[in-house]
Image (cartoon, rainbow, N blue to C red; front, side, top):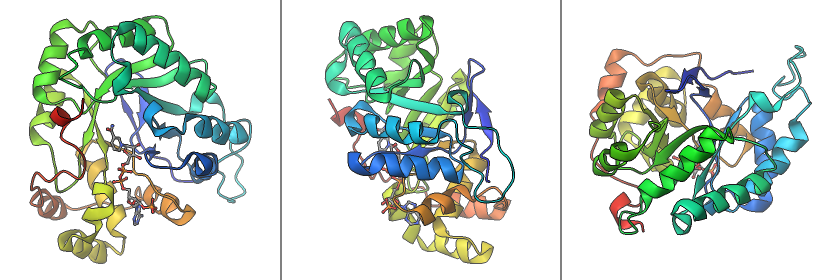
Amino acid sequence: MRTPPRLGLNNGVLIDQLGFGLYKVPPADTAGLVAMALDAGYRHFDTAAMYGNETGVARGISTQLGTQAGTGGSGELFPALAREDLFITTKVWNDHHGYDATLRAFDDSMVNLGLDYVDMYLIHWPCPRRGLFQETYRALETLYREGKVRAIGVSNFLPAHLDRLLQTAEVTPAVNQIELHPWLQQHELRKIHEDVNIRTEAWSPLGRGQVLADPVVQACATEHRRTPAQVILRWHIQLGNIAIPKASSEARIRENLDIFSFELSARDMEALAALDRGQRTGSHPDNVN
Ligand SMILES: NC(=O)c1ccc[n+]([C@@H]2O[C@H](COP(=O)([O-])OP(=O)(O)OC[C@H]3O[C@@H](n4cnc5c(N)ncnc54)[C@H](OP(=O)(O)O)[C@@H]3O)[C@@H](O)[C@H]2O)c1
């Protein structure tokens, strides 16, 4: 079994540096893919109310809890999978910003997920035109103090949004989950995160698959006898990012986790660093409201 390294969040909670992303995973496929990912060795899952597949996540987990998920047929004996082994993130959607609405949205997600606590709860987008993210975050702080979530954070926050949030936040966000891949390296945000002790979590870590065709990535993959996806995910790990690739087949799910037995050289890292061109594959955070 492959085991991703764990990183400490700013409150001491540990998170697997590589997780499994569930955006655009159809609800009907979710349970099967989650069970497959658990068997491959993933323990960290990233969903959201907006993805409409939280109940599928619950079903996938429930089929594996208590089993020896992750033995990978090696015959080795692993302890039975327990709730504490998992790290489940979900997010409050844009139409539930505001203190009371967020508390209600959280309760709905807990019911959907069939959990009595969530490992991490994030504000999905800052929605600057709504002007409610500070109040929304106050609800996350309440949930955190009540022990219903082990860590709280944000997603898609630009420097100006973080700046405003940190003026009123009593709990520093544990992560900012942002679009990040070799074509969009987010130097400014990564520096800010480091300064204020927020972990950088990369969404669309493969650039929605588009960056896999980049010739520099391909050359690096050939040199290491790895796939382009493995090279990019290894790059994230060496930069210290948390990465949550999504994949739809068992082969890709396993391939994306098999990145802990090789290393990119300083020269490889420099070549990949040179690919930054500020190119988003998703929306700009100021335009989502
Ligand atoms: N917070 C946010 O606003 C936000 C926004 C977007 C995403 N996210 C999170 O980030 C996760 C990942 O982002 P993403 O799904 O947009 O993009 P991604 O993980 O960068 O890329 C997924 C694409 O790459 C393909 N792929 C995966 N592994 C591959 C491999 N080994 N070889 C070839 N192709 C491969 C997948 O194909 P198949 O599926 O066909 O295998 C899919 O088309 C999401 O699932 C979600 O959890 C968060």
